[in-house]
Length: 365
Image 1 (tube, rainbow, N blue to C red):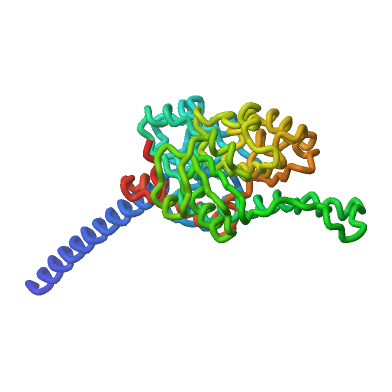
Image 2: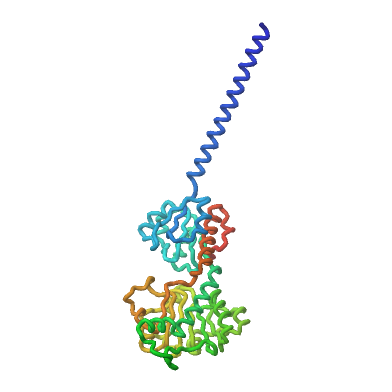
């Protein structure tokens, strides 16, 4: 009898202990499940403003963030941008996206970082962003080689009239080899002027040295030791315009450089000089450039940037044989664009991890 009672009591105690263990396990599971679900619900949201952003950067973001992507190849309309940014913790934007006071006001305090897949930041209202203490990430350095290579291609295509000559073939104008047909100036032995010598301008200077140019002149706020090593000379803009056979614009667009090249500027250049712009379209007063090309104030122009972009098909520039236009391809090397997307993604993730000091390319402003 005693043994039966003992076994009964012992069994009841074991069942009670087992129930407690099971209850604790259930509570633990429910707590873990709740945490997982909560974590999933609170994944940061990143607004991506174009469907054509390279996958290399997007894949990094997808691991930790929910992406709200504008699923079109054209820029996101401003009303749509304002609507979508209200829910975003971060924005992955391009140089076509104007992030101004109106957009920032719509975003409110939820927006933690702005990352642009560009080296230029003239599409960002820096004053309004700074007043909100929002970090900005951008992509300098990585596109230097690609843009400098494109500059050389544009320089050669314009000086040696490659596009004009190609069109002449289709018009039936190529009748026979002719000593004076489609001739243009050579680069070797010429004077080159670079307006705004930054990373890209310096790399262009390095490439030009191998062409055997006579002089490289440049404008900059300060003298650049790297340029001095190449034999380049810092001069003021007027001297550069007067002496240069080729004028290459690589300056940033800031209030001081808007319409830097206007009627009076072109009139200071040599009549046989060639103008190359790979910076921003608004650095040039475009009607003045058109006039200078039509009336022979300068010989020719090669443009990777213009105003507006895309340029309308009825624009006067497209009717000029002495103007080579390409559609803003400066950084359009596949490897470069992939790396730009990766840097942009890492800029975003660093801030979302509360480690802004780990941003690979923060803009200091």
